[in-house]
Image (tube, rainbow, N blue to C red; front, top):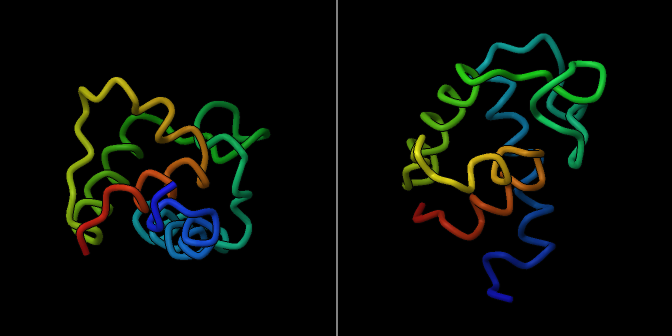
Amino acid sequence: MSEANAPQTVDALLPEVAELIVSALNLDMYPAEIAADAPLFGDANDGLGLDSIDVLEIALVVSKRYGFQLKSDNEDNIRIFSSLRALAAHIASQRTK
């Protein structure tokens, strides 16, 4: 496992990525309220209940902040955006900034 993708690196990114999501989407919640493994999409009772427009917003701020593109045609997007932890792990493995 690369150092960038080590569990402690991903765990360290969780609060930062949660803050990015809350800020980008103007969510009425604290970043700490986003459970690391809860689904980002679907029913808001089980997770954040985000939609495809929200993903575009998150992808834009991630690309600006971390220096890599999240492409809409990436077949891994469902996995990448499945949870806060999955998104943080992807960022840890791809970031250039």
